[in-house]
Length: 283
Image: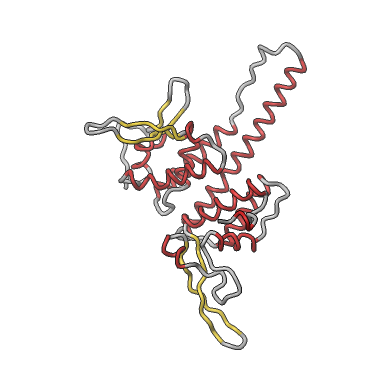
């Protein structure tokens, strides 16, 4: 869908629909964001919104503040809407359909804007500080906040690059790709925690994505995962020493499957300090 804006306004369409509250905080109406992201029906945008909310919960983000519920008044009846903060809109974009060029534009826009906001250094108000030590303490605190913001901002570049990779590969990635992404993420956010490839594959098995065990179908996608749209099988032929050429297929993760496995791994890292939860915790 192509969105045309009139009136000679050359700003980004996302800037054009941005709103500002009396306190200066910015937000985007999810209803107005939908067509700009290429969604003609509200129900279709609800899918990435719900995923974004789940992602925010897993990250400890205040959902009520960042996904403030609202009502859009129409001629017929009020419609459900959300007032999305900049970061909430970024999460929605990152959970959108990677095959839509409008979603790619939204991901780029909100990644850049969120990074700009994170690294912006607010001016220090020293008027209320009455000692050199207090001023130094305030300076150290501001520096720590700025460094933390820079780390968070840099972390945004990973998901944006990841989304681009998924678009170039028709939205499909392997479990090994996710393991590599998680290793990089853990180095910055969970120092000292080892992310092992076999653990990721075991977790994929527990999540119902692949078959694990002493079987010829080890690491192949489950019927449930294929039916749910979490994975797509990829045919693969290989040469064996005694049986010649044999065929098999392996799991390629769709964006939904990638998010399912990623969220499970992050939840376990936060709860247990490791990728796999203890067996007794598995329902």
